[in-house]
Image (tube, rainbow, N blue to C red; front, side, top):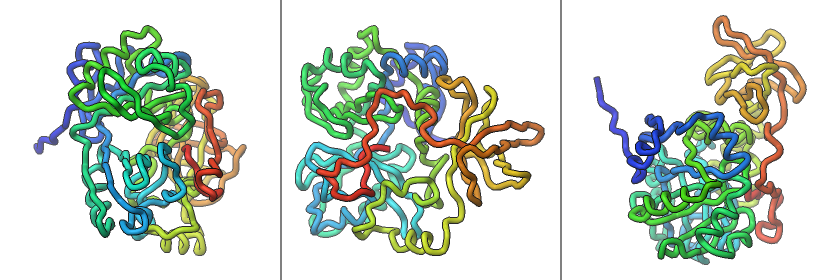
Length: 381
Protein backbone atom coordinates (compact mmCIF):
# COMPACT_ATOMS: atom_id res chain seq x y z
CA UNK A 1 0.00 0.00 0.00
CA UNK A 2 1.31 3.43 -0.95
CA UNK A 3 2.12 5.80 1.88
CA UNK A 4 0.82 9.34 1.38
CA UNK A 5 3.15 11.97 2.79
CA UNK A 6 1.43 14.36 5.17
CA UNK A 7 3.05 17.67 6.09
CA UNK A 8 2.91 19.22 9.55
CA UNK A 9 2.56 22.86 10.54
CA UNK A 10 4.90 24.42 13.09
CA UNK A 11 2.12 24.10 15.68
CA UNK A 12 1.57 20.34 15.56
CA UNK A 13 3.15 19.73 18.99
CA UNK A 14 1.01 22.52 20.46
CA UNK A 15 -2.11 20.77 19.17
CA UNK A 16 -1.01 17.47 20.67
CA UNK A 17 -0.33 19.15 24.01
CA UNK A 18 -3.86 20.61 23.99
CA UNK A 19 -5.35 17.17 23.29
CA UNK A 20 -6.50 17.86 19.76
CA UNK A 21 -7.70 15.06 17.52
CA UNK A 22 -5.47 15.28 14.46
CA UNK A 23 -6.22 14.05 10.94
CA UNK A 24 -4.94 14.68 7.39
CA UNK A 25 -6.50 17.61 5.53
CA UNK A 26 -5.28 18.93 2.18
CA UNK A 27 -2.01 17.06 2.61
CA UNK A 28 -1.42 18.39 6.13
CA UNK A 29 -1.88 16.91 9.61
CA UNK A 30 -4.36 19.32 11.17
CA UNK A 31 -6.41 19.62 14.40
CA UNK A 32 -10.00 18.56 13.73
CA UNK A 33 -11.27 19.29 17.22
CA UNK A 34 -10.11 19.93 20.78
CA UNK A 35 -13.17 19.72 23.07
CA UNK A 36 -15.85 19.09 20.44
CA UNK A 37 -17.06 20.61 17.18
CA UNK A 38 -20.36 21.98 18.50
CA UNK A 39 -18.77 23.51 21.60
CA UNK A 40 -15.98 25.11 19.55
CA UNK A 41 -18.46 26.37 16.95
CA UNK A 42 -20.68 28.07 19.54
CA UNK A 43 -17.69 29.52 21.39
CA UNK A 44 -16.52 31.21 18.18
CA UNK A 45 -19.99 32.64 17.53
CA UNK A 46 -20.14 34.11 21.08
CA UNK A 47 -16.52 34.78 22.03
CA UNK A 48 -13.33 34.29 19.97
CA UNK A 49 -11.64 31.29 18.40
CA UNK A 50 -8.02 30.84 17.31
CA UNK A 51 -7.30 28.77 14.20
CA UNK A 52 -4.03 27.31 12.91
CA UNK A 53 -4.07 28.15 9.19
CA UNK A 54 -0.34 27.74 8.62
CA UNK A 55 -1.02 25.17 5.91
CA UNK A 56 -2.31 27.85 3.53
CA UNK A 57 -0.07 29.11 0.72
CA UNK A 58 1.25 32.64 0.31
CA UNK A 59 2.93 34.22 -2.72
CA UNK A 60 4.65 37.60 -2.95
CA UNK A 61 4.50 39.14 -6.41
CA UNK A 62 6.36 42.24 -7.56
CA UNK A 63 4.46 43.31 -10.64
CA UNK A 64 3.46 46.37 -12.59
CA UNK A 65 -0.14 45.68 -13.62
CA UNK A 66 0.36 47.23 -17.03
CA UNK A 67 3.33 45.02 -17.87
CA UNK A 68 3.01 41.79 -15.87
CA UNK A 69 -0.28 40.13 -16.93
CA UNK A 70 -1.19 39.80 -13.23
CA UNK A 71 -4.56 41.49 -13.81
CA UNK A 72 -5.25 38.89 -16.50
CA UNK A 73 -4.75 36.03 -14.01
CA UNK A 74 -7.70 36.71 -11.70
CA UNK A 75 -11.41 37.47 -12.05
CA UNK A 76 -11.54 40.39 -9.62
CA UNK A 77 -10.26 43.80 -10.65
CA UNK A 78 -6.87 44.65 -9.18
CA UNK A 79 -6.16 48.09 -10.62
CA UNK A 80 -8.98 49.68 -8.62
CA UNK A 81 -7.73 48.27 -5.32
CA UNK A 82 -6.22 50.79 -2.92
CA UNK A 83 -2.99 50.01 -1.09
CA UNK A 84 -3.73 48.13 2.17
CA UNK A 85 -6.90 46.54 0.79
CA UNK A 86 -7.56 42.92 -0.14
CA UNK A 87 -10.05 41.29 -2.46
CA UNK A 88 -11.50 37.82 -2.99
CA UNK A 89 -11.89 36.14 -6.37
CA UNK A 90 -10.84 33.28 -8.63
CA UNK A 91 -8.06 32.05 -10.88
CA UNK A 92 -9.55 30.17 -13.82
CA UNK A 93 -8.29 27.83 -16.51
CA UNK A 94 -9.01 28.43 -20.20
CA UNK A 95 -12.21 26.35 -19.92
CA UNK A 96 -13.56 28.64 -17.17
CA UNK A 97 -12.98 26.13 -14.39
CA UNK A 98 -11.78 27.33 -10.98
CA UNK A 99 -8.06 26.67 -10.53
CA UNK A 100 -8.40 28.17 -7.05
CA UNK A 101 -10.25 30.78 -5.04
CA UNK A 102 -7.92 33.23 -3.37
CA UNK A 103 -7.37 36.53 -1.62
CA UNK A 104 -5.09 39.18 -3.13
CA UNK A 105 -3.54 41.87 -0.92
CA UNK A 106 -2.21 45.11 -2.39
CA UNK A 107 0.87 45.93 -0.32
CA UNK A 108 2.10 48.79 -2.53
CA UNK A 109 1.52 50.01 -6.07
CA UNK A 110 3.58 47.12 -7.43
CA UNK A 111 3.78 44.64 -4.54
CA UNK A 112 1.07 42.02 -3.97
CA UNK A 113 0.41 39.02 -1.76
CA UNK A 114 -1.79 36.15 -2.90
CA UNK A 115 -3.19 33.76 -0.27
CA UNK A 116 -4.18 30.41 -1.74
CA UNK A 117 -5.51 27.04 -0.58
CA UNK A 118 -3.09 24.51 0.90
CA UNK A 119 -3.81 21.59 -1.45
CA UNK A 120 -3.51 23.77 -4.57
CA UNK A 121 -0.39 25.78 -3.65
CA UNK A 122 2.00 23.99 -6.02
CA UNK A 123 -0.46 24.02 -8.90
CA UNK A 124 -1.26 27.68 -8.27
CA UNK A 125 2.42 28.57 -8.42
CA UNK A 126 2.80 26.80 -11.76
CA UNK A 127 -0.35 28.47 -13.09
CA UNK A 128 0.82 31.95 -12.07
CA UNK A 129 4.33 31.49 -13.41
CA UNK A 130 2.86 30.32 -16.72
CA UNK A 131 0.92 33.55 -17.27
CA UNK A 132 3.07 36.22 -15.59
CA UNK A 133 5.08 38.24 -18.09
CA UNK A 134 7.58 41.08 -18.26
CA UNK A 135 9.60 41.91 -15.18
CA UNK A 136 7.21 40.30 -12.71
CA UNK A 137 9.00 38.71 -9.76
CA UNK A 138 7.27 35.76 -8.06
CA UNK A 139 8.23 34.28 -4.67
CA UNK A 140 6.51 31.41 -2.85
CA UNK A 141 6.88 32.30 0.86
CA UNK A 142 4.55 29.59 2.16
CA UNK A 143 7.30 27.69 3.97
CA UNK A 144 8.56 30.72 5.90
CA UNK A 145 5.29 32.52 6.67
CA UNK A 146 2.80 31.26 9.24
CA UNK A 147 -0.85 32.28 9.48
CA UNK A 148 -3.26 32.38 12.43
CA UNK A 149 -6.94 33.37 12.25
CA UNK A 150 -8.66 35.04 15.19
CA UNK A 151 -12.43 34.94 14.69
CA UNK A 152 -15.40 35.97 16.84
CA UNK A 153 -17.26 39.01 18.17
CA UNK A 154 -14.56 39.61 20.83
CA UNK A 155 -11.67 39.26 18.37
CA UNK A 156 -10.86 42.99 18.23
CA UNK A 157 -10.66 43.29 22.01
CA UNK A 158 -8.41 40.26 22.24
CA UNK A 159 -6.18 41.56 19.46
CA UNK A 160 -5.89 45.09 20.86
CA UNK A 161 -4.47 43.55 24.03
CA UNK A 162 -1.81 41.91 21.88
CA UNK A 163 -1.06 44.42 19.09
CA UNK A 164 -2.17 47.71 20.61
CA UNK A 165 -4.57 50.38 19.44
CA UNK A 166 -5.30 50.78 15.75
CA UNK A 167 -6.76 47.34 15.16
CA UNK A 168 -10.24 48.75 15.71
CA UNK A 169 -9.72 51.16 12.77
CA UNK A 170 -9.30 48.42 10.18
CA UNK A 171 -12.24 48.33 7.78
CA UNK A 172 -13.59 45.06 6.42
CA UNK A 173 -11.22 43.62 3.81
CA UNK A 174 -8.34 45.95 4.61
CA UNK A 175 -5.06 45.31 6.41
CA UNK A 176 -2.27 47.09 8.22
CA UNK A 177 1.16 46.55 9.74
CA UNK A 178 1.34 46.02 13.50
CA UNK A 179 4.19 45.16 15.86
CA UNK A 180 3.59 41.86 17.65
CA UNK A 181 6.26 40.06 19.70
CA UNK A 182 8.87 42.35 18.20
CA UNK A 183 7.87 41.61 14.60
CA UNK A 184 6.19 44.01 12.17
CA UNK A 185 3.47 41.83 10.66
CA UNK A 186 0.43 42.06 8.41
CA UNK A 187 -2.95 41.79 10.13
CA UNK A 188 -6.03 41.84 7.90
CA UNK A 189 -9.67 42.17 8.84
CA UNK A 190 -10.88 39.12 6.97
CA UNK A 191 -12.12 35.63 7.75
CA UNK A 192 -14.10 32.55 6.85
CA UNK A 193 -16.67 32.31 9.66
CA UNK A 194 -19.08 35.23 9.31
CA UNK A 195 -17.76 36.76 12.54
CA UNK A 196 -15.56 39.75 13.17
CA UNK A 197 -12.18 38.31 12.28
CA UNK A 198 -8.52 38.93 11.69
CA UNK A 199 -5.78 37.02 9.92
CA UNK A 200 -2.23 37.35 11.27
CA UNK A 201 0.83 36.63 9.11
CA UNK A 202 3.88 35.90 11.28
CA UNK A 203 7.29 34.41 10.38
CA UNK A 204 7.14 30.70 11.13
CA UNK A 205 9.84 30.83 13.78
CA UNK A 206 7.59 32.99 15.96
CA UNK A 207 4.28 31.22 15.35
CA UNK A 208 4.53 29.08 18.50
CA UNK A 209 5.13 32.08 20.85
CA UNK A 210 2.31 33.96 19.11
CA UNK A 211 -0.09 31.01 19.47
CA UNK A 212 0.72 30.67 23.17
CA UNK A 213 0.45 34.42 23.80
CA UNK A 214 -2.99 34.68 22.18
CA UNK A 215 -4.28 31.70 24.18
CA UNK A 216 -3.36 33.44 27.45
CA UNK A 217 -6.50 35.52 26.86
CA UNK A 218 -9.46 33.79 28.51
CA UNK A 219 -11.77 35.07 25.76
CA UNK A 220 -9.92 32.87 23.25
CA UNK A 221 -9.97 29.10 22.74
CA UNK A 222 -8.25 26.99 20.07
CA UNK A 223 -10.67 25.84 17.37
CA UNK A 224 -10.25 22.90 15.00
CA UNK A 225 -11.08 22.46 11.35
CA UNK A 226 -14.32 20.65 12.22
CA UNK A 227 -15.88 23.81 13.65
CA UNK A 228 -14.24 25.91 10.94
CA UNK A 229 -16.15 23.80 8.42
CA UNK A 230 -19.53 24.20 10.14
CA UNK A 231 -18.93 27.92 10.63
CA UNK A 232 -18.15 28.48 6.94
CA UNK A 233 -21.06 26.29 5.86
CA UNK A 234 -23.51 28.34 7.93
CA UNK A 235 -22.38 31.32 5.84
CA UNK A 236 -22.73 29.42 2.55
CA UNK A 237 -19.00 29.74 1.80
CA UNK A 238 -17.58 27.20 -0.65
CA UNK A 239 -14.70 24.87 0.19
CA UNK A 240 -12.25 24.28 -2.63
CA UNK A 241 -12.01 20.65 -3.68
CA UNK A 242 -15.45 19.91 -2.27
CA UNK A 243 -17.87 22.58 -3.51
CA UNK A 244 -15.75 24.00 -6.33
CA UNK A 245 -12.86 22.68 -8.41
CA UNK A 246 -11.18 22.96 -11.80
CA UNK A 247 -14.29 21.59 -13.52
CA UNK A 248 -16.62 24.09 -11.83
CA UNK A 249 -17.20 27.59 -13.17
CA UNK A 250 -18.00 30.62 -10.97
CA UNK A 251 -21.32 30.92 -12.82
CA UNK A 252 -22.35 27.49 -11.54
CA UNK A 253 -21.13 28.09 -7.99
CA UNK A 254 -22.92 31.43 -7.38
CA UNK A 255 -19.61 33.26 -7.75
CA UNK A 256 -20.45 35.70 -10.53
CA UNK A 257 -20.34 38.63 -8.12
CA UNK A 258 -16.59 38.08 -7.84
CA UNK A 259 -16.12 38.58 -11.59
CA UNK A 260 -15.32 41.94 -13.17
CA UNK A 261 -16.60 41.67 -16.72
CA UNK A 262 -15.06 44.98 -17.81
CA UNK A 263 -11.58 43.46 -18.12
CA UNK A 264 -9.93 40.49 -19.79
CA UNK A 265 -8.97 37.43 -17.75
CA UNK A 266 -8.09 33.80 -18.32
CA UNK A 267 -11.31 31.82 -18.89
CA UNK A 268 -13.50 34.83 -19.71
CA UNK A 269 -14.42 33.65 -23.22
CA UNK A 270 -15.46 30.25 -21.84
CA UNK A 271 -17.70 31.92 -19.24
CA UNK A 272 -19.31 34.13 -21.87
CA UNK A 273 -20.07 31.06 -23.98
CA UNK A 274 -21.57 29.37 -20.92
CA UNK A 275 -23.79 32.38 -20.25
CA UNK A 276 -24.95 32.31 -23.87
CA UNK A 277 -25.61 28.57 -24.10
CA UNK A 278 -27.01 28.20 -20.60
CA UNK A 279 -25.43 27.25 -17.31
CA UNK A 280 -25.64 23.44 -16.98
CA UNK A 281 -26.05 23.36 -13.20
CA UNK A 282 -26.42 25.78 -10.33
CA UNK A 283 -25.65 25.82 -6.63
CA UNK A 284 -28.60 25.75 -4.22
CA UNK A 285 -28.76 25.94 -0.42
CA UNK A 286 -31.18 24.04 1.80
CA UNK A 287 -32.25 23.57 5.43
CA UNK A 288 -33.49 20.19 6.65
CA UNK A 289 -36.73 19.93 8.62
CA UNK A 290 -34.87 18.04 11.35
CA UNK A 291 -31.46 17.72 13.00
CA UNK A 292 -30.48 15.07 10.46
CA UNK A 293 -27.48 16.10 8.38
CA UNK A 294 -27.16 15.69 4.61
CA UNK A 295 -23.71 14.51 3.59
CA UNK A 296 -21.42 14.86 0.61
CA UNK A 297 -22.81 13.06 -2.48
CA UNK A 298 -26.34 12.61 -1.12
CA UNK A 299 -28.70 12.92 -4.10
CA UNK A 300 -30.93 16.00 -4.38
CA UNK A 301 -34.44 14.98 -5.46
CA UNK A 302 -37.08 17.53 -6.47
CA UNK A 303 -40.63 16.49 -7.35
CA UNK A 304 -39.47 12.92 -7.84
CA UNK A 305 -36.57 13.80 -10.13
CA UNK A 306 -32.90 13.33 -9.25
CA UNK A 307 -31.38 16.71 -10.09
CA UNK A 308 -27.91 16.57 -8.58
CA UNK A 309 -25.79 15.99 -5.49
CA UNK A 310 -24.94 17.55 -2.15
CA UNK A 311 -21.40 18.93 -2.00
CA UNK A 312 -21.36 20.09 1.65
CA UNK A 313 -23.74 19.21 4.44
CA UNK A 314 -23.68 19.19 8.22
CA UNK A 315 -25.64 19.76 11.40
CA UNK A 316 -25.81 23.50 12.06
CA UNK A 317 -25.08 24.21 15.75
CA UNK A 318 -26.49 27.74 15.41
CA UNK A 319 -29.75 26.73 13.71
CA UNK A 320 -30.23 23.34 15.36
CA UNK A 321 -30.97 21.63 12.05
CA UNK A 322 -29.24 20.03 9.11
CA UNK A 323 -28.04 22.38 6.37
CA UNK A 324 -26.24 21.94 3.08
CA UNK A 325 -25.44 23.05 -0.43
CA UNK A 326 -25.14 21.30 -3.76
CA UNK A 327 -25.64 21.46 -7.52
CA UNK A 328 -28.86 20.85 -9.43
CA UNK A 329 -29.37 20.56 -13.19
CA UNK A 330 -32.53 22.68 -13.36
CA UNK A 331 -33.97 25.70 -11.55
CA UNK A 332 -35.23 25.07 -8.02
CA UNK A 333 -36.60 28.16 -6.30
CA UNK A 334 -36.23 29.39 -2.75
CA UNK A 335 -39.05 27.98 -0.62
CA UNK A 336 -39.45 24.78 -2.64
CA UNK A 337 -39.00 21.41 -1.00
CA UNK A 338 -36.34 18.84 -1.88
CA UNK A 339 -35.45 15.41 -0.56
CA UNK A 340 -31.84 14.45 0.17
CA UNK A 341 -31.34 10.75 -0.36
CA UNK A 342 -28.65 8.14 0.16
CA UNK A 343 -29.89 4.58 -0.05
CA UNK A 344 -32.56 4.14 2.61
CA UNK A 345 -31.78 7.57 4.12
CA UNK A 346 -34.25 10.29 3.15
CA UNK A 347 -34.13 13.84 4.56
CA UNK A 348 -36.77 16.45 3.76
CA UNK A 349 -35.44 19.98 3.29
CA UNK A 350 -36.42 23.40 1.98
CA UNK A 351 -34.40 25.52 -0.43
CA UNK A 352 -33.25 28.81 1.09
CA UNK A 353 -31.01 31.81 0.51
CA UNK A 354 -27.56 32.11 1.99
CA UNK A 355 -26.24 32.79 4.50
CA UNK A 356 -28.01 30.29 6.71
CA UNK A 357 -26.78 32.16 9.79
CA UNK A 358 -27.63 35.84 9.63
CA UNK A 359 -26.46 37.15 13.01
CA UNK A 360 -22.69 37.15 12.50
CA UNK A 361 -20.59 40.05 13.76
CA UNK A 362 -18.76 40.61 10.46
CA UNK A 363 -20.07 43.37 8.20
CA UNK A 364 -20.98 42.26 4.69
CA UNK A 365 -20.37 45.09 2.24
CA UNK A 366 -21.57 44.89 -1.33
CA UNK A 367 -18.87 46.90 -3.06
CA UNK A 368 -16.60 49.70 -1.92
CA UNK A 369 -17.46 51.81 -4.94
CA UNK A 370 -14.75 54.32 -4.13
CA UNK A 371 -12.26 51.49 -4.60
CA UNK A 372 -13.69 49.45 -7.44
CA UNK A 373 -15.97 51.58 -9.56
CA UNK A 374 -17.60 48.34 -10.72
CA UNK A 375 -20.80 46.88 -9.25
CA UNK A 376 -19.57 43.34 -9.98
CA UNK A 377 -16.49 43.71 -7.76
CA UNK A 378 -17.10 42.56 -4.21
CA UNK A 379 -14.61 42.68 -1.36
CA UNK A 380 -16.38 40.04 0.75
CA UNK A 381 -17.51 36.50 0.17
